[in-house]
Length: 167
Image (tube, rainbow, N blue to C red; front, side, top):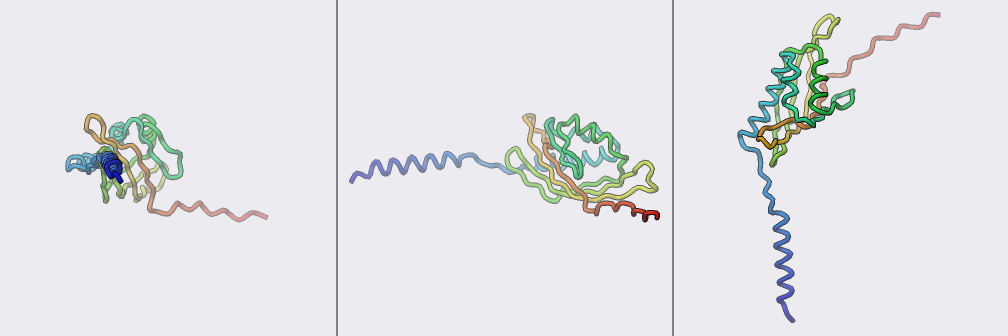
């Protein structure tokens, strides 16, 4: 029995298998981590300053924001327009609690708090919640936010009571 063809097939299979696994997945560098965390800081500072353009600058051109109780907002320009419609925000703070990345993708999970001042409301109200953001490293080496979803930790406001029907 000739074992050379069997060994050749085995060698080809091993080389092919190793070739498929040869892509090295690299984690985030310290500067990558700092850049992603800095984007969150930029967002919070811009929110406090009512700077929609500065806030939107952390998003990629094709970014998507998945808002609660509303349709997705797609594209940096649309995101900036939406951010400009938000009521005044103060005390905005964000905390990244988990940052994981491989190659040119990273995600940041965290929490936020902020105060909204609604026109006509008797007093500002505090909001708190959580978020998940996905970042992609750009060709220039910067990190841009490409996908974001967030929601409140607070229960939805209760509708006013319905007055009893008159008889």
